[in-house]
Picture 1 (tube, rainbow over the protein chains, first blue to last red):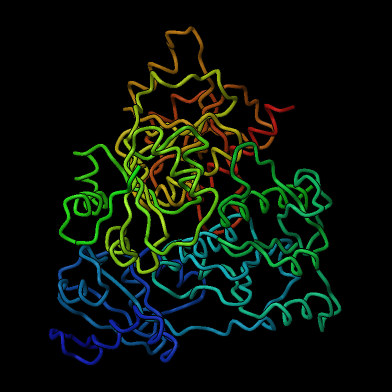
Picture 2: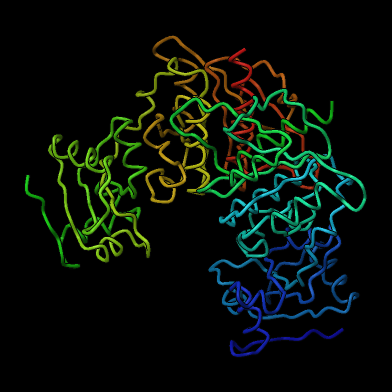
Amino acid sequence: MPRKVITGFSNPTVKFVRSLREKKHRREARRFLVEGLRLLTDAREGGRLPEMLLMAQGRDEHPLLAELERAVEAAGGEVIELPVDLLAKVTGKDNPQAVAGVFAEWDTRLARIDRKAAPIWLVAQAMRDPGNLGTMLRTADAVGAGGLILLDDCVDPFSVEAVRASMGGIFTVALAQARWAEFEAWLRQGADGAGGQLVAASLREAQPYRGAPYAAPCFVMVGNESQGLPEAYEMACDLRVTMPMKGRADSLNAAVAAAVLAYEVLAAVER
Amino acid sequence: MPRKVITGFSNPTVKFVRSLREKKHRREARRFLVEGLRLLTDAREGGRLPEMLLMAQGRDEHPLLAELERAVEAAGGEVIELPVDLLAKVTGKDNPQAVAGVFAEWDTRLARIDRKAAPIWLVAQAMRDPGNLGTMLRTADAVGAGGLILLDDCVDPFSVEAVRASMGGIFTVALAQARWAEFEAWLRQGADGAGGQLVAASLREAQPYRGAPYAAPCFVMVGNESQGLPEAYEMACDLRVTMPMKGRADSLNAAVAAAVLAYEVLAAVER
């Protein structure tokens, strides 16, 4: 198939892709931008293909890139070539990767989650930092979690920063977004009759996190970076656990706390 | 003592403080900027006072701020009042905290580290992300580590981003900077006759991280975000451990890996 070649900065496609750096435009278009062959390959292997593949002219050939190109074309997607400096303007980076892709966002309703698919799930409430959110997706992949459930007003999981920090996790684990009330109802009265154990790191009436009675499916929940979890959310947990705090600080970074706890849960549910 | 009041943007003090947002100027001045009463209080309680305290006019009174002000004046430091919009320009934030301070950097030579002072030390090699570096300082505080040792070319630990992410850890744990060769020599042939166990998360000939024979003082080392540790550094370790990787990813975020490992070491050395 002959490829479309774009050379001008004022091209509507260039303007469109460039606009996806802003949340407002991502929301309108329900599309997001992913940079780099590594992430695009993770996506393909996770069953997601870009609707539009942007490749720099003069790039080095790579078998994975050729494979990606064929897959996008076979799926009816668009493959576009453009000068490297134009790609840099689109992605907003001085040293752009040789390839980028535009993906359609997918359905992130809680109803899509099959809680029995994995022994661990991560839950983040009102998370504000895209790096933390992406790191939680990366950790979810590593601990074999089913995915990440975002509660209340979290930062956009499809932002360039979150996608980058996820190191492909955005494509390899499930993602859901819900308000607390909806999540609580789903957890407690799942249509499938299944429940789940909700666990939070907490200072309130908590037991030591090591050796606590974790049970699958275990939902590991952390709260907002500044505020922590609302007290009502903690009180709704089946288990509140505490990690040693030996110094002056009274909390860990949210993504760090989730990971330390998730690895402890993993050891327990694997036993 | 009558306070100095600054009202103009072209004031040399304003220009100087503002310049500390850039690494080049921090290096020249060997000074860095800290924002917010919380961090400044952590500093004071950790035995560090700012040379210069900047307070917004019309701020809310706070007993901790009054205490800080007295301490700075008693130590011969400078206390400056300025309009809130000018403080915003100095710190580069739209919503500045009501107070900021300029600190002199301190001696971060390895020789200052007393390895016997704590059972755990964190070590980061060629770390590039200020958020990760700050998070490691925060984790070091939480696990009761003696501090963080930075190897080779790391991002500046005195940057605003690193200091903020440390949540006070920059003031409460020790910080050292060294090249690998110097660190290895210090670790193996300490003038005090003491050694230490060097541990890395690794995929090379590694044993499971849970239940590995950790021994104090244990130095938990993680590598650069993209490259990981150089092979030679891993091979120089006393112990190489591996964490389960259940998904597609082959590594964790560096600050996350350090924390998961450090909490495991803490449980072992406390036993």
